[in-house]
Length: 154
Image (cartoon, rainbow, N blue to C red; front, side):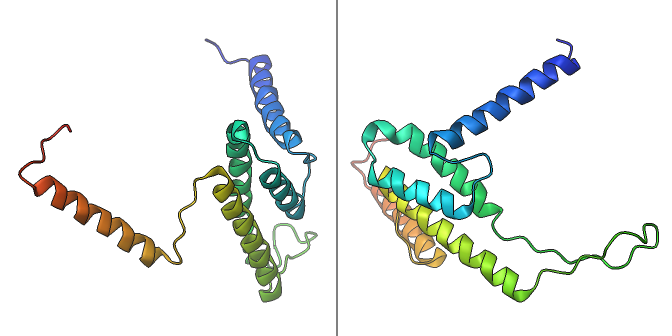
């Protein structure tokens, strides 16, 4: 199959329409803010029914992407010899970083609530606690497998 410009445009349009359709499904505009997303998540959780699980997973994907992009650091640019007309950009300030981290925490809280609503939430206070639980489960499984009455495949 030859990839033509027309075919490439068609593929891009289809993918774009899917993204916009997912956003509109939750009442989000094309350029929605983080607060809009948090509100949409709260509204979804409030009106959740088991038939909405796939819809919830799509919302979870949108939330996860937004969390990943919530904090960004810019080291700034100095004066450019090759393009002296370009304005130098300041690095990200500590206040801006704290504001981005606050938004990210709010988004993570909304994600946790959504996961609880979807029944896919495991509460661990820290990564250390999570690793300890995994280790315990492996130890229990090893102990069960070492018992003489345990038969593989059961």
